[in-house]
Image (cartoon, rainbow, N blue to C red; front, side):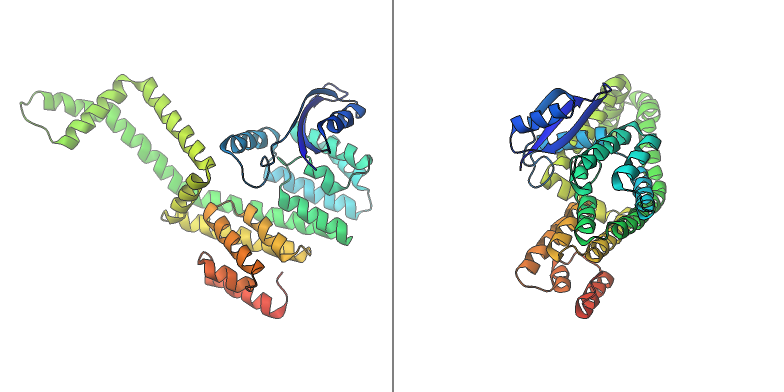
Length: 357
C-alpha cells in the first residue's frame, strides 16, 4: 500500500502534517475529508522517501521533514516511560495517550499524540498509528511495538523500550561530554588561526614590504590569504557557510557519507569515543529486538538502520547477506572485520547457548 504525504488543517484550525497509507490518492483524500480536516495538500510520497534507496532530493526532504516534525530523544523517553506506566496500571492506550497529549508541552509532539489517539479510537493499532509519523517514531520503535502487540506483551515491551531509550540517551550524553573538550580545542584553534590571518599576518606584511627581498612561496600565499580575509570579511563568512552546506550535501550522498563516517572513526580520541558509542547502541538494539521476539533477519536490518554510521551499516548489511546464505550470526559478523572481539565473543556464546538476547 503506497504512502501519501498530507498537509491539512484540523477542526481547531491547526496545521497538521504527516504520512498515511491508502490504496489510491482518492482514497487518501476521502479518508482525510471524513476526519473533518481541511485539506491543503495531499500527494504520493516517493517510494524511497522513508526507506530503501533514496535520491539526494529525497534525503534532503527527509532531513527537513524530521527537523520540522521530530522531537528530542529526552521527550520520547519520557513519553514511552509514562505510557508504559499508565498502560500497566490498566488504562487503555487511547485514554493513556489522550491524557499524555493534554499534559504535553511540546506543541509538535502534542499534535502527533492527538492524531495517534484519534487513530486508535478509529480502530487502528498503536504501531499502525505511529507509522504515520516517521519523523517521530523510527522503524525500530514501531517494530518493537508491533512485536509486543502480536505477542500480547505490549506492556512488557514498552517497559523494556523505555529502559533501552534511557540507556541510549545516557550514552549520548556521555559521548557529548567526552567529545566536548576535543571540539572546544578545534574551535579554539580555528579562531586562533583566523585571528592570525586577520590581525597578526597583516602586521608582518607591512614589515616585509619595507624590505626589498624575495619572500618564500608559503609566506606570499599566507599574506595573500590574509589580505583576502581582511578585505572580504563578508565573502569569507559566506564562503565558510557555503563550504559547510556543501559538506552537508556531500554527506547526504551514499559515497560521501561513507567517506566522512570512515574518517570520523579514524580521528584520534574522537574516533574511539564514536566507535564505543556505536557498538554500545548496536549491542543494546540487537538485544532488545531479540528479546521482543523479532526474527533475526529483521533484527539485523533494524539494527543496521540504528547505528548511524555508514561503515558499520555496510558491515551489518554484509553480515545479513551472509546469514541469509547460511553462515552463523557470529561468524558472519566476524568476517566483516568491523566488530571488536568482545562483541563477537558475546554473539558466539549466545548463538551456542541459543540465548541471543
